[in-house]
Length: 417
Image 1 (cartoon, one colour):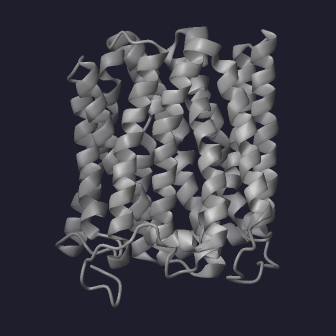
Image 2 (image 1 turned 45 degrees about the horizontal axis):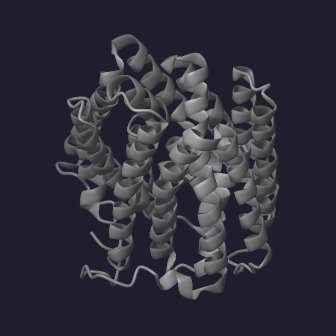
């Protein structure tokens, strides 16, 4: 179903949010920063795997990095609501600059050890616990509510455009200059966001929350808010399944590329770029149809399609076919998550937005430790070729009881909108 006044699905200009100067500054700064982030997202697991030759230890790096998100996201949402979003982002982006610069210095000095990667991954994860929900809830202050869904989709498109460019550059840089250059480039790129934020004057959507309640009480209110709204609760359940098991590329791709496809860092970077190409197409599809509201079919059918493509990827040893399967998974994954993001923001009051988006962050990224360890174990114990299949099978298995419950409770799959 569609939002009121949006009965007819139509295509629109996906670049409309760029008419807002605030969003332009933010979008350009983030574009530069995310290229650096994706360079590091390729370099860090490659460094960890080449140092240890263990998929499980590689999974541990991802688990450690996202563990703070799992542990502290709900509390982060409450704290973020008490401060100006711009101030929080200036702090988190500056902290990320320092952490990644430290990693670059350790690598260039020749003193880098595996435990350094773990500690700095944890530090970056702690910063991201506050950074991610802040960025999600900040967008409405850049474009207003009318252009919000379009801005979310365009922001996602930018993220995935960088997801194409960053890994491709990283593959070349690692081959010619080493992983340290990727870490250094990422550190410098955070300065672009800090500079862009200095030019932004966000809209006043609401006054900063000055709650007299304790943090735990605020967290409970946020969770109750979601639980009492089936639209939000259904979205969170589906996102938990997909966010945990569907996209563990930081563990699966390096091992699959090295062991199954017999490719080096260049091949790994290309596979990451395939995923980004698919995800970019998915984001643009959302942007093109955003005026007609979130699509119920995307919410309920796409998770199954994602699970199927994950299984199919384990059925090939051909580099190009594997890349196409990874691209298809990325397309449907991003189509799903961008739609879920829009659903959660459009159906949340301003006073709860940061808390609801902290739950989004919790189930989308905070579940990564579980998914990364699961993928690492699957690679180590049933073979590198079947890691993708193991993730696809558990996605499909977990969707079945949820769909059956919905059919039993409502007689049909209920509309989200």
